[in-house]
Image 1 (cartoon, rainbow, N blue to C red):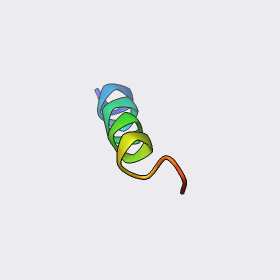
Image 2 (cartoon, rainbow, N blue to C red):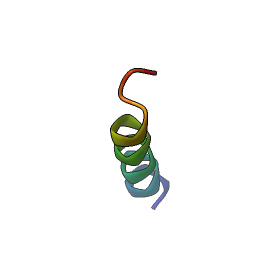
Image 3 (cartoon, rainbow, N blue to C red):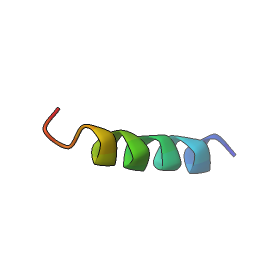
Length: 20
């Protein structure tokens, strides 16, 4: 289940650094 983890990680990163 790597896709699920990647999706969550990307969502968190987007929220923490939406500008980046």
